Image (cartoon, rainbow over all chains, first blue to last red; front, side, top):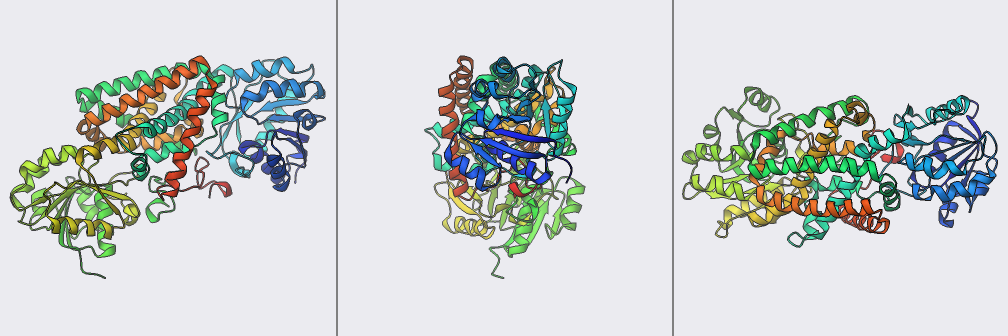
Length: 310
Length: 310
């Protein structure tokens, strides 16, 4: 096994992403030592039992003390409090990064608490499942996924290179963006998809003309795919929408504008317009599959059901 | 193998559903003989080559002649023309059914062409993948899926029972509804999910602030799930929206009303309201999994990527 990228890594928060990082660090020898912080004692017990960390703490400062890399893995709504807690104990030269789904808010909330000589380099691995908690993590979550880093203009080159090496050691590809561009890109590729998935599941659950049992029985017609996304962690997603308000509202405006156009085509029975819209969306999926970000197998039938969907 | 349910079955249209029916009929011995109709010569060649049918025709009337069960498997927009073509050759006692995703329009388009003594019993297997064409079919597509039949009040009991036995022979569960209730249930469980998936993929493709290559690279954040649905057959879906206008517009109105409420909560930074909405959607997924209409494995990581997503 190669030399660890960091001597001591601290995981602040042990959910899906934190626990997956723990597994891949151990598997690939990326860290000499891993300390962790979790708010709940049940999570702390699991983190030790599943060997996600070497030592666990009930407060963030103790976990961060002496670490070379501190990774914030709590919901982004907790970052400000965590940054205030760990700021005083961070050692000079330490790197603070995170895995949050928004980036401008991270800089705004964390930067004021970083002492001189500490490098804040926000990050976001674009990977996840709809499950959460310390038991949901797995080592290859980041394999062939993109990690977006949003370093400041005057970032310390050596610190930045170490962080890139760390993520590449997790199997990821690294991309650089400004925080505001990140927030716009993720608003359309992740936040709005989650928002409309949550919304349609809520709508379906509230109807008086169609029963909940009918919604469940006939969910194979497309609805069930949205329930998977809408089963994602509510705390995490609440924080995303509170902290990426501007980009989400901008993209939501575009979405509803286009939806109104579709609605008008349906009301008018404009078959040609519908066909045109439904045709152009096929090619983009082809390109996602070609880019290795999706499998080709049809999954409406679900992969447990046999030959056609294997 | 048991006695076939029908001596002679005609498949009018050999796409995903038609070809899957051909495979399951052959596998389970549900039909003594299967004739087929496909518009394109390439599909006709495939239908013979893949043993989907025993004989193939280039017009619907020849395929339907002498059949005991005629299953319309073309896009619903073609049903009226097909019904007019096959009406004159249908034999007394024959059953005409279909697999279309809307049901009121089927009755309206087909009933006028049915001769006395022929039983029109519309149907809809709630099953499918995003793929289309004669090569996309597989025998267990209907296994443990629901088929909704919308028989008229005065349906012939023997004919109805035979059709139920046929679908049960395909592995399906049969449910009965009125055509208008079917159209409302499917609007929310299938048509609106497809509509908003098509819409967001279209929106993402049109942005000037975010490039297409960024959308593709970061699609693992949720967007790629929508591209699967939005890769479904454009002709089929054009016809669905043209033929289920009223129910779709009604459900779309509910969806946008709820989305406006969510938008307001985001604009106001109403974290409690967001958390409340995002929490209640989790339980409905649990019930879909319990009902056997979905698998539990997290699929954001995709099942090819390893341990956590197997």
